[in-house]
Amino acid sequence: MTSQPSRRGEPEAPDPLPIPVVDNHTHLDISREGETVGVDDLGPVLRAAARVGVDRVVQVGCDPTGNEFAVAAAEAHPSVLAGVALHPNEVPGLAARGELDAQLARVEELAGRPRVRVVGETGLDFYRTGPDGHAVQEESFRAHVEIAKRTGLALQIHDRDAHDDVLRVLADAGAPDRTVMHCFSGGVETARECVSRGYHLSFSGTVTFKSAKELRDALAVTPLELLLVETDAPYLTPHPWRGASNSPMLVPLTVRVMASVLGVAVPTLCEALSENAERLYGPW
Picture 1 (spheres, rainbow, N blue to C red):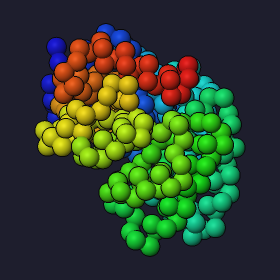
Picture 2: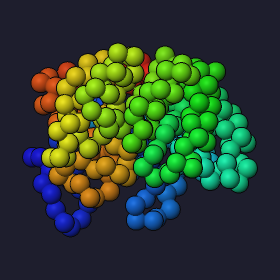
Picture 3: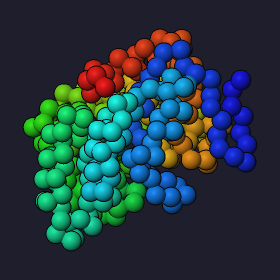
Picture 4: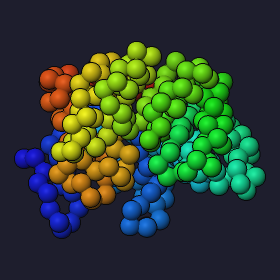
C-alpha cells in the first residue's frame, strides 16, 4: 500500500523500489526538532532506507561542523559517501569573522579523504542572503569550483533565486566535468541549458508537490542519463508527508512520481539513477 498522510506519528515506509538507488544529497546531522545527532545514531535511519531500496546516500556538509560530521559518517558507515563545502548562506558570516580563507583550505584538505567524493553544496543563494553578501558568495563559489577541479571531485551546486548568476559563474569559471544541480528548482529553459552543458539535475520531494507543475515540466525535458534523486533531508519531504521531517526512507515516493512524469517504468528509472550516481561518485 502507498503511504497515506497522517497528522500523528512518523511517516510510514513506502513500498520498496525494485532496484536500489542513491539519495544524492542528505543532511542526516540536522534535526528539525533540535535534537543532537551523532555519527553513531545513523544506523537506524540507514537501515530503514535500505529496506525500501535506498541503500546508499551522499551526506553533505554545509559548514565547518557539518563537514567534519560528513567525513566521519562516511568513514563509519559503508553506505555513506561525503560532500564538503561552505554553504553560500554561511559564507558572509565566515568572511566577516576573517575565517573564510582558513575554512576553504580545510574544505580542500577534507576533499582529499578517500570517502569524500563531492565538493558541495556551494553556489549562490539570493533568497536568504541580501545584496551585500552576493559578492563574497560568488568569491566562495568560484573557490569551490577550483577545489573540485584540483581534487577531481564532483561539484554539487546550491541555486536559490540565482539561476542566471549560477550559470554565468559556471560558464566563466569552467565547470568541472561532473557538475550536479542539487535540488533543481528552475524551469524548462534553465533545465535545457543545464542539459546542453552536460550538468546532472537532482530532483527532490518538491517535484511531488501539487503546485510544482513547472518543476515537473523541467524534469520532463531532462534525459535519464543526467538524472539524480535526493531528499535534502530533513527538508522538502515528498507528498503525502509534506511538513514532516524527511529521511532517505521516503525517496521511493519521489522516484515513482519522477517515473510517471517521464513516462518510464520504475525499474528503468531506478537503474539509471543508480548508474548515474556511481558514474559521478565512484563505487561506495
